[in-house]
Image (cartoon, rainbow, N blue to C red; front, side, top):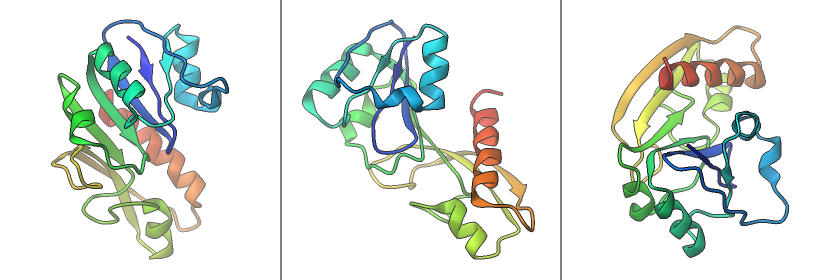
Length: 165
């Protein structure tokens, strides 16, 4: 199993069958990402292209034969080729109860709008931002004095619980 992290958001992560490592950059910015740190600590190789839509990155991604592709706070529309590669599918973990707050900054928008509840949605990735079929949702209450950072941490844990029960 290996990780496939891409620049542009928190993380794009492919669950891969084989351990492969391709270094697309001399400066490995992924070292500061918690997911990359965890993967590295567990001895899982990391692949981090500047963009998965570039030819060299796509070749490595296809060659890795991922079982699944999961994105979190990524903010990039993937090509149909990227979406179709994983055997089990491509999935997005979004920090709102979709369809509310599609797109960027769902946590900040929920707080700014005075919402009392938000949550996490796991959905299929399609060639449109946050428009795929909803597979799972979980709600939680927003504390009256809760900051976006605090809420973000709670939503991240909730998203992880949905993915890996």
